[in-house]
Amino acid sequence: MARRKVAAGNWKMNKTPSEAVKLCAELKDLVASDSVDVIYCVPAIDIVPVVDAVKGTNVKVGAENMYIEDSGAYTGEISADMILDAGAEYVIIGHSERREYFCEDDDFLNKKVKKALEKGLKPILCCGETLEQREKGVTLDWINLQIKSDLQGVSASDVAGMIIAYEPIWAIGTGKTATTEQAQEVCGAIRKTIAAVYDQATADSVRILYGGSVKGSNAKELFSQPDIDGGLVGGASLKPEFGDIVNYDK
Ligand code: 13P
Image (cartoon, rainbow, N blue to C red; front, side, top):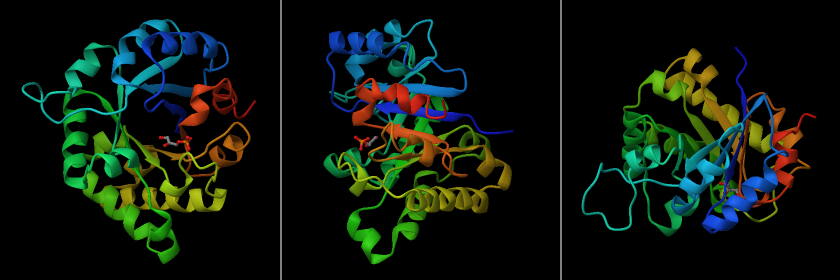
């Protein structure tokens, strides 16, 4: 069965609750699609108003982060149950900004992936190399290490339903998109790793996205690659251009 494409927006630390509601209204008709899964991953405080604002549309909602514990004295954190109860279905785990600015390592991210799955949240697991790693020629080794570490002890059936996003750090917010060949090479390598660790059926089912300066103008070429099942989009997900990304094939 063909994998459904995904256009996921990562709003990062943008949009107040009232701005978020306005953006949902602005994008509503533009992102309508019956062939592509559309997801808005939004700041925690925007989840409730955004879930309400997209009710009755094709848009699903995700969080940008979560904590590994169920509840308790973890000031400032939010739990998987809170995200689910607020009406979101997805959670981004391991974005390079969290790895870098908040020192999240693969052991911690593995715990997050497992907690999300245990609770019924769908993880969007991110991986990606620095420019230095790419220039040294260790990109594929690095990505394989991240994927294998972050998925330690996760079952094949859980991985089959997951989303993985390959986001080269040097392409995030820089306007410098990876070439189609570079993006396909790494997404293909991730799928091969999943096949080796699990089995071919799991590899054929997991959806692998490219992220890093995805735009209306490059979405079609990127999303047409055999191992690229859509995009995780930062800057362009906050603009009407996101509609062009969702409807890349029109
Ligand atoms: P940009 O699309 O702004 O480059 O951001 C990519 C990203 O980090 C999505 O998670």
